[in-house]
Length: 80
Image 1: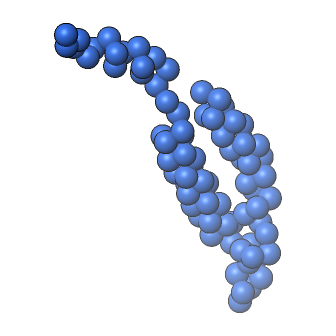
Image 2: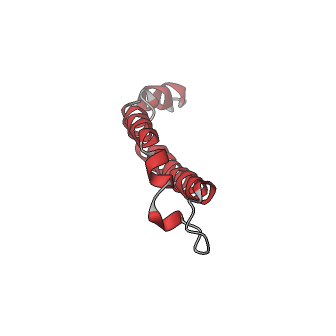
C-alpha cells in the first residue's frame, strides 16, 4: 500500500501541471505557431501510462504476501 500511495500522490501532483506541460513550445504547430494542446496531451498521457506500467511491474516483483510463510508451512503435509 505504501508504494501505491506514493505513486498516487506523485501522479496527483503531476495532474496539476498537465495543462502547463501541454502548452510548451515543443507542441506548437510549425506553420501557424499555434498551440497544439491535443498533441501535448497525447504525449503527456502516454508518458504517464508508461510510468504507471513501470511502477506496476516494480510493485508486482517487490511486494510479498504478508502471511505467505505461515500459509505454506500450514498447507504442506508432514511426513514422518
